[in-house]
Length: 219
Image (cartoon, rainbow, N blue to C red; front, top):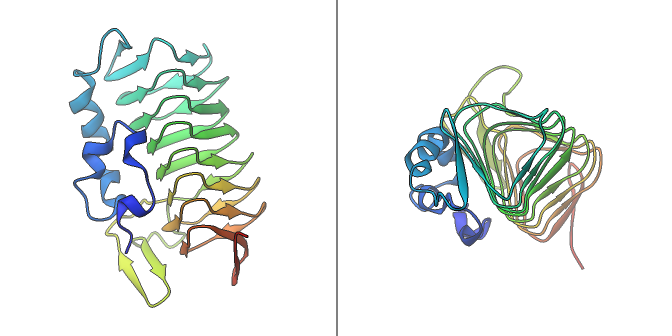
């Protein structure tokens, strides 16, 4: 259960070496910064430009002048980082992605073709290939009581040992506008989250999450 290949196609990220060497996908979160630093120097200089402070940005990427990018970041080819985006560091953003207006990233892996285009917060999370967060939807990465995050599923729970862990969002997941993915949320491939949802626990692949206790299969 929770094997990475069940949720994420590792052919669509340069973080594959990192993710292949952990049991659960969230175990990669504390290692994102060091991984970015380790692979940065090996990136093709014909494709990526080194900006200093362990920041590598693909030459084909479009980064607005008003965007802020902190150290330990890789931005992939043909990605767009829009007006006032705030990338706080330890972020690996894939190819053909969109980091939108006033969107904030912190300690994340965004696979290729991910879209977080409008007022999103993504912290301590992994978003799979073609995952999309609707406007204003966020990952909440710290519990209100500040205790360690636990992943809860039917039949049990797994202690992550992490104080900060937002969500694992599988490939091709659609998250509706204004939704919150609470700490420790895991969403399976191809699933859809209704707008204005507050999501917890594990959502199976190929599902439609309407509200707590009401999850339907995609016909």
